[in-house]
Length: 205
Image 1: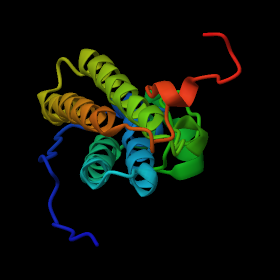
Image 2: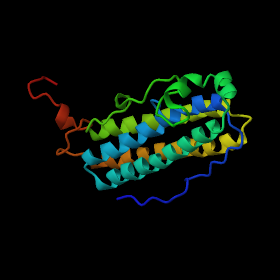
Image 3: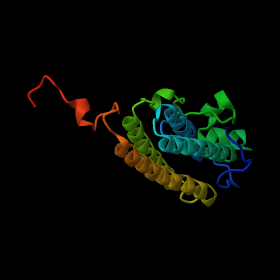
Image 4: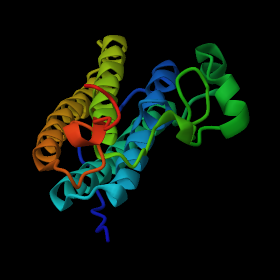
């Protein structure tokens, strides 16, 4: 069970609206490497994780990704609130506006809606952990790209820098989880890295 603390993990106080930036940053809300996919990925994978300490890592990080989803939503909302119709049209935000006004809806920067096919829950502990490490690096790369776009906007840049730093920490934690997992592999595990699993009794080698 979760306890909700009614504050953002890192403050978001954006003074000037900027719909162009919002259209890029929304990718970390509902894009292929965004926070919605991350939270659903980890909170789904924890059920088939046989080691409680690694399941705990998945639960911890999946929960924090929900907090990051909240932060990205706050950033996009603050960048688009109080826009005039002229600003909406001039920024190219009019296409989004037609369908969602200024509601926060999960999509990538290119307008592609969120799709659960963008992440995997394989039920194979090694496969899932490699998926998770790759996901954190892809999210970090996306935040790198966003930081290049917000170089002159400190109100936006600081929370984005925080989110990027957390991706690096998560990558390291999943690396530790992978080490714990590989140390526990034995003849009872169903995954490879296990010579007995891959051995062909009818083969010559």
